[in-house]
Image 1 (tube, rainbow, N blue to C red):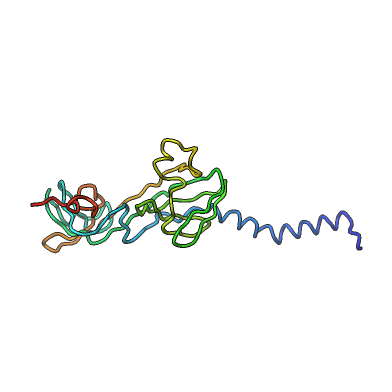
Image 2: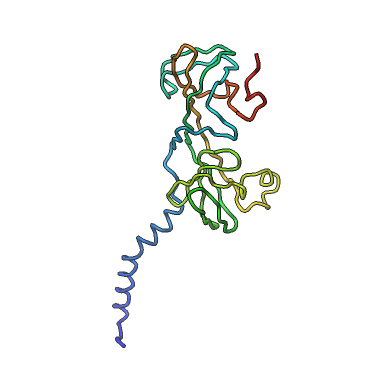
Length: 208
């Protein structure tokens, strides 16, 4: 067996560290890289039963010509005026963060997520019915089951849930609408409209 001097062994160790170190660092760091923000989810409707269809303004609404707060106002809607909600964009300006006290496998439509204590799950668009879009290990996952960290039990007894939301996400919801005259614009105030939820009685619309 070849005997290596102490100096040779030190040199060999340094070489090994230099060669494999970046790969180890990349593997560890990628697991906690946050998603790019703002994250724009085009076409998203962010709650259970949410539907783009006929909406009714419940108060006056200033509708912008473009999807910007400083864009000119193109339509001034009156209360009770009907519009067609064409589509929308949910923008996550700050991702939520979930951490876990024990290992968990979270189901999603893009495959299982195996997460362990010390790693972070980043929350993006909530999809309704207990599912969300999320970011983990450098990639996007759809339809992530939130049962282990986001339900009624977690709110009043966090010890019964494996995960804890340590920071909630901040989002903006812009909706593209068309009025009865055919003019189109954008609003960031969907709370000023009725008819958004298809699960409401009468579809959320008031009978006339």
